[in-house]
Amino acid sequence: MGWEIRGLRAEEMEQHGELVFNSYTHGRTLNLDSELDRMLARPDWWQRAAASMPDYDPQQTRVMVESGKLVCSVTCYPRLCYVAGRLARAACIGSVCTHPTYRRRGLLRQVLSDAIDWIRSQRILWSFLYGNEEVYRGSGWRHLTSWSVAADLRVRDAFGAHIDARPVDLEADLPTLIATYERFNSPLTGPVVRTEQYWRTRVLRAERASEYSILTNAGRAIGYYVGTEGRSSEIAWTEGGRDVLAFLLRRWSGTVSLPLCIPGVVEALRDISLSPAQGDYYRHSGGIALEEASRGLWQHHGDPEGFFPEFSDTAGLLRFLREHDYVMWPVGRL
Image (cartoon, rainbow, N blue to C red; front, side, top):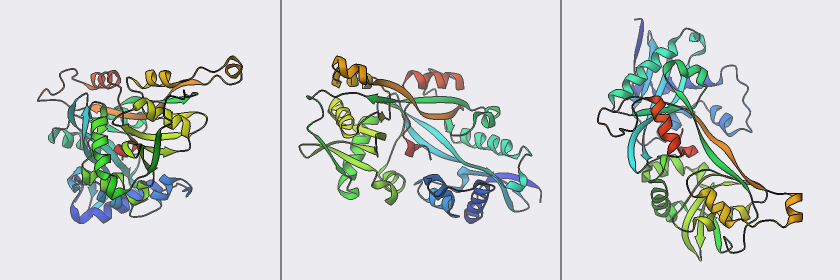
């Protein structure tokens, strides 16, 4: 029968799950204290992940087949993203794998090339993935870093003391989460547009709902955050941004990692901070620092309709994303 590159077929979902599981666990000692490794330890983890994608279609997974056997695959997950007040169709590349028996033959690059052709056929403007640039650079992807802020500050009494937090109630709070997310993220560049179904199946699955907390002011919801022990991985508010940031700095002692570096955040931290007394300053001065929040690889695939005339290639795309303070929440990756 020979080699063939094509879209996955519905009846091959289980076989593809086996390919991904064998590829990701081959020669790897799993650490079950790691959330990622606990996921990989489940033979059906890929099928479960695909089921959590509301719009997944097997054609999004591009496979190389030899005599009916799946040997190599790349999955393209379309994403509608907020981009500087506009919307853009992008694709997150994931579940990239080659069966251990077929490695080191250059097969993956062929499937990546087919994936790019499929992306262009869907009029998707660019793609992003998370992996080693040395592996993917030859296929056109380039490195981009986004930033978070690490703050170790004393907070002025006027800020944040009236804010409280409570665990999310999935049913009662879902409309608030949806509205808050859209209002906060729609002016930004990078976050994925989340439908109600996306929230239910992808974001607030049983194991993730407990990570979300609702922020309140006098019992009224004004935002939410995700995180524990001094590190937030997602945050949004509809009002009182300075108070929200002050609340998180009060909630956790020491350095607090805030998951975005957008216009106004550093200024807000400066405004809410209390200058230490001289003796305190010499013992522990504190401060603000930038941290890498996300290290991804991006590639531009064309823009025939001219939605983004500001750039026309991958270098221009990266420049545009940097200039607009690219943000990607972890759940939007994969």
